[in-house]
Image 1 (cartoon, helix red, strand yellow):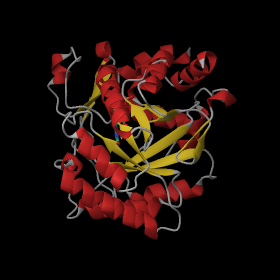
Image 2: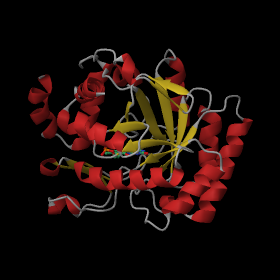
Image 3: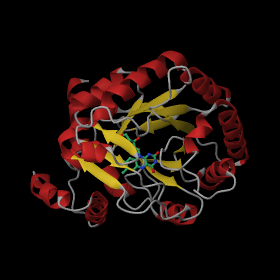
Image 4: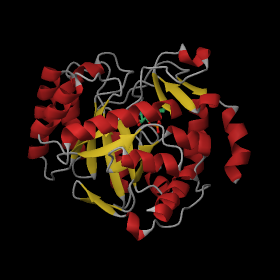
Length: 330
Ligand SMILES: Cc1cc2nc3c(=O)[nH]c(=O)nc-3n(C[C@H](O)[C@H](O)[C@H](O)COP(=O)(O)O)c2cc1C
């Protein structure tokens, strides 16, 4: 497999440079093309027909540069973003760290984004095919973060298959406070209102943090249901360092993703499913790096699943392999 050769070269680079190289390779078409997914994997969720349940998680294609290439890798859907209204550079570098032995990553990118205009232009330039979600963020220096999300809903409702409200990045100070009760109700009311005004009613999911405590989760789920949202993404990166053996990386601030996030995010997913029943669609995200892990995530209560970090360690053939594995054993 070609990634066996490419991986040592990529891992010799700073993780962010390696990611740029991966994006460039995808843009150049230097990547495997997966077979079309087995028709038995088709499913309709939030009124959208997905060819298979595996998507690429937000953060991989923040600026919608490689949507079609990502679909060609075998993903059943792509979530671009997070996108902020105005372009912003994010935090100072270095800001992404690998822990190879743990198959984990710590990042504190801080919503580096080319902004709504650039991402919207790219999405409208491509032929509309496949399922493409747009994950919305807020500018770091925004005087009104609620308005930033509402603006995102207004802007992207016509080009996005669905919208994701990301209030769980640990890298924008104060952002996660939007998960708290009153703030959340106010935010979701503004988002719902923006959707009603838009020409197309896009499904909306809310992406939560895996660090929400057991007491807070029921109120968060209720607020999401009460506001008429369609689903949740469970979950974003964690502030926890449990399962990270590399103490140098563990000391870096930011959110941890990858294999150590698998068990805790599954636990949260199962709790969330128990709370919401069939009232919301759930997208399970965190630590998927094999067909077995993908199946476990679905069994934990997900309608759809997503991955990012697993592909760094397993290579671009991972989505095709997972989708084929899911089809084989049903
Ligand atoms: C480098 C990096 C950047 C990310 N950027 C975003 C982002 O912009 N918005 C977002 O909602 N999630 C972002 N995430 C979180 C992922 O979408 C996902 O929720 C998390 O990494 C867990 O999945 P994984 O273990 O398969 O990577 C990012 C993750 C990584 C590793």
